Each structure stands twice: as structure tokens, then as C-alpha cells.
Image (tube, rainbow, N blue to C red; front, side, top):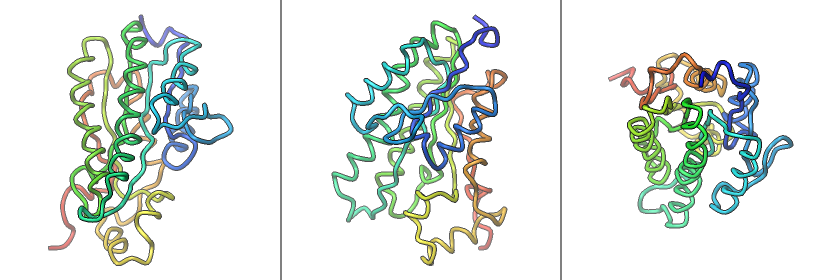
Length: 239
């Protein structure tokens, strides 16, 4: 089945009511898709608790009542900043539940419809922190886990016309970033000064990369991680 000839233009976006997710939703609309948002709030969202498997599965069943959804953006996430010695088990488990398990459940639910359509686009929002960052034990573990799942899914699902990739934001100006990186903190100032393009990223920068990977024409790109980080993953500006 050629996706260009179908009426299925829906995109499931988790955590699409604010921040990067809201920018992705806005870009999807601009690209001609119909976003279906799963979030804990939002006027146009299917309300659910993405940390809770039963709530997530119920929301997914509701989203799929109108038929398969062949594009998915696993965007929802939270940081839980803490050092290794201070990170609590509750924080670690919460990070796994929201950042990693929700992506597993959403992808698993949508895969049958994608296989039936012989077409699918899965984009998961990872992070530059997957490469390592202080005070990010739980966060970096789950974001690196997204990349590992993505590579595995690429191997399993490519034969079905399904691509699966991650977009890995660096410093992006959002409420989540501000919460984890207080503006007056020396470490926050160091982050901003170390970005090669000399500016913070915006949610629309991330949404642009997601849009590229959701496109029909991105069928030969799978299992990849695209860093939207202003060059911060390349190395240090100053020795």
C-alpha cells in the first residue's frame, strides 16, 4: 500500500501539549498531518498518565479506534536531575516508566497497523545526555535506552517498510531545560558558552528534524540518531 494514496495522515505524539512536543505537533499540522496527542493535560489531548501502563494502553486503544496510525513520535520525557549518590530508586524507576517504557508500549501498539500498511515512521526523542552528562544518571540511562531500542527496531521492522530513528536534542530553551539548568548556575552558563553556533536551540529546531524523518521520502534512513545540538557533540570549542 502506498502511503501517499491513503487517507491515514495521523501522527501519534506523546507529551505533545507543551515544550518540544507542542512544537512537533505544530510542525506536523503544517506538514499536513493530523496529530493525535497523548498527555496528562491539553485541550486537544487524549488525557492519560504515561507513567502508568494501564492508562497508557487505554489511551492507545482509544487513539486506534479510527484505524491504524502509521507515524509515531515518542517525545514524552522528564529529567530527574541528581548525582549518582543522591539519585533515588523512585526517581530512577519514574524515569524508566516515563522516558522508556511509554515508548515501548506506544511502539508495540502501533506496529501491527504499520506492518499491515507496509509503511511506518517512528521517531523517538532521545538526548545529547545519552553520551553522558553530570547529574543525569536516570535520564541518560533511559535516553540511551531509546537509542538501543531504536536500532533493534530498525533491524526488525525495515522489511515492513518501517523506519525508526532518534532525534537527540542538545541545549533547547524549554521549561524542562530551565528546571534542570537554573539560569544563574555556572554550569548552565558554561553549557551555553560552549555551543559552537553560539545560541540555544529552540523547540522548532527539533521539530524540523522530526519532520524530516517522518516524511515519506526518508525511507532509506533508519536506526540512526540525529543530534540537534548546535555542534555541541563534536567537541570542545576551547582547549
